[in-house]
Image (cartoon, rainbow, N blue to C red):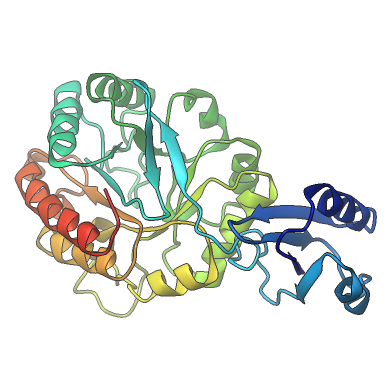
Length: 341
């Protein structure tokens, strides 16, 4: 249930009103915009009388939320959410609310020279974040599984040299203890409905980049986000990374329609992964541009300094030169739309 408070209502009265509602067994989520305060009631609201609420002098409107996701719902939080990442030297890197987050780097961390050189190249081109896999979920148990904790150390070395916040994938709860210095935790498609893991992420306060599952619906993606938010962590970035369909030309099918759909129903930032969506390096720039044009809050792109020799997903990795050219176009797109990178 959503309660829109009248403009100019005294803050103390609103807080007392909310406290009275909580005594009826619900939790209150406050969303304060520039012109209106919205109270989101989470829990069993069947015993709360709408007519009585509408008669209250503070209340402008009451809406019952039909969707199963509450905290992720734009009705609960009408304005866009922005995820801010503090930088070591001061300042912030942001995703959402008009700030495009460009995340770039190799699929997998392979060596210090590799990750540092790619980090320097993508930063020079204008990327705001460095991605790289230390722990790799692979379809085959015989494929390269990542360098593990050593890979994390190399990512942190690249972060120290470039100042870029790092994004890397978490696969299991026990790995959280070594993710203290990771800036954004990525949850991959295979773990989107690992509810035990999602609940644990709700108890931490690190930003989470949540990828859509291989065959998951938009509602299922939002419900996965709801699991994290229900635990108290609202710093979530949704990622459309393609879904599995009958067509085998591309690795997956990039669902660009998911971007405006998600932007309509949730306040959380939405980014796109054109690398995993297509699996073809030559398609990545076109799909990245299409994602931004469709309203995405950013992209996560695989960039490798030598894709032919990559230990993981070289066929979908673009070179630093190609990424640099892509960034020139994305900056123009952002400027045209009144957004910034």
